[in-house]
Image (cartoon, rainbow, N blue to C red; front, side, top):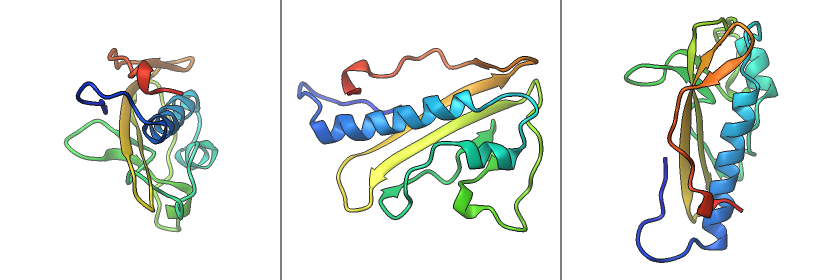
Length: 135
């Protein structure tokens, strides 16, 4: 999560970048369902242009000390060595976002944990986003 510290109000640039990160996480959570392959998940997920925005190392990953299995990369990082698999009930994913403009300014890192169920997914995170940072 990211927070704005102090008594100052968020600038339009801060709200814009926070909203982009929020939208990426929310839309990518909606893609999670049993039966979708990792590659299908990657290629149907929301990404921002890599030449305009900095990003986290993965779109999704498993729970652990660091980006654990399954590590699902951005579309531009898929190649013949990428591991494909299938999303199955009982799996838990971290849905990641880091958004920051390459030319500088604020950056926002957000993450949610999601359990895959027989019929879809269940959000495990119960900490709300900062509504005053959303556009």
